[in-house]
Length: 504
Image 1 (cartoon, rainbow, N blue to C red):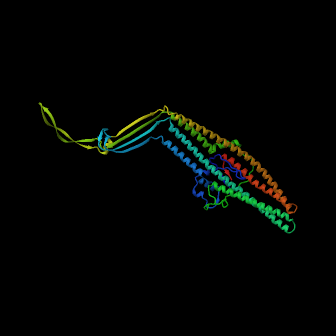
Image 2: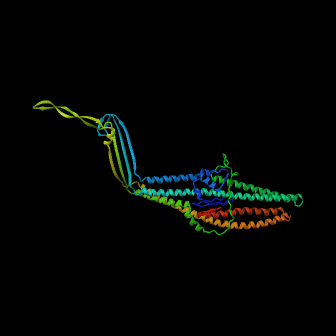
C-alpha cells in the first residue's frame, strides 16, 4: 500500500456523478497542470499509478486540446491588438502597356504611339486618435486571454477530478471484491466441516443443502463484485481516453492499479463551516476567476464600442514615381549650326543664315526618370461621425448586453459553487453519521456471528439462522467499506474547495 499526497493548484467547480455505491471524490492536483511528456504518459505495463492515469488523461483529453487552442487564439488576438498601434505601410507597383492614341504619363499630353510605363507608390498611415479604441481593445483582449487560461486550468482540473473519482471507484470495488471472496472462503470452510459431520451422521443433511445454497449465493456476490470492478476499470480507461482491448490495448480485466493506504476516519468535527469553505473557494476556483475576468473583458468591450462615437484622426504619407518610354528628353549642346532665315530688306526678300547652338536629344534613363518624377505627400485626416445609421449605438447596446450576460453567468457560477459546497458539507455530516452507525453495527454483528457460529458448530443452531447471521455481517461489512470511502472522500471534497493538500 502506498500513501499519496496531492497538492491543490487553481481549482474549479465540479459536478459529482454518483457512480454505483461510491458517491465520488473530488481532488485537484497542481501537477495536473504540468506538461506531460510522452514517456510519462505511456506506462510500460498494464499497471497504473494515479499519477500516470492523470498524466495520460491530460495528454489525451480532447477538451483540453480545444481549450489550449482557445488560449492560443486569445494570445494571437492580444498580440494583434498591440500591433494595431503601429503604422500601416503599403507598397504598390504597376506595369502597363497601350498602343494607339494615348496620354503621355509624364507630360499628360496626347501622343500617337505605344506607351510602356511603370508606376510605383509607397504609402503609410498611423492612427493618432480614435477615442482610445486601440488601447481599450488591448485591455479587453488581455482580460479575455486570462479568462481562457483560467478555463484551461478548469478543464485540466475537471479531467484530473474525473480520473481520481474513477480511480478510487476501482479501489472501492476492489476492496468489496476481496470481502466477497473472503465470504466465499468462510462459507466454503463451513460447508466442508458440515459435510464431514453429515457423513458422520452427526448433523442432518438439510443443513448441508442450506450451506451449499449459501456458497452459491456468495459466489454470485463475487461475480457481481467482479463485474462492478471491471466496469469501474473500463470507466477509468475511458477517462484516460484509452481504447479498451482494441489493437493490443489493455482490457479492463487486465489492468491493475496501485493501492493507497486509507486510514480509518476519526470522525472528528470538520474544522471549517460551509460558509468558510465557500469564502475560501472564491479565491481559488478557476471557473470563478474565469467568469469574473470575462465580465471585466466584456466591460472593456463596452468602452471599445463607445470609442466609435469619437472622431478619428489619422496621419498619412505617400511616396510615388513613374517611368515611361515616351517620357521627356534631355538636350546637350553639340557645337553651332547655321539656321537659314528669310527676311525682307527694302522690299526685297532675302535669305540669311543665323548661327545658333546645336543640340542633341537623349532620353532620360530608367533611374533618372524615377528620380525626376518622384512625388512626396503627407496629410492629416479627421473623420467625424455624424450619422452612421445608428451602427455605433447598436454596437454599444450589443456590448452592454454581452456584459450583462457575463455578469449573470458569473453570479450563476458563484451560486452553483455555494450550492455544491453546502451539499458537500451536508453530505459529509450525513456520511459521518452513517459511518459511525455502520461501525457500531459491524461490531455488534461480529459478536452476534461469533455466537451463532459457536452454536452452529455445537449443533445448537440450524443452518438457516447461521446463514442469516452471516449474511447480515457480510452486508454490514460491505456497507462499512462504502461508508468509510464516502466519509473520507467527502472531507477531501471540502479540502479541495479550500485548496488544501490532500493526502491518501
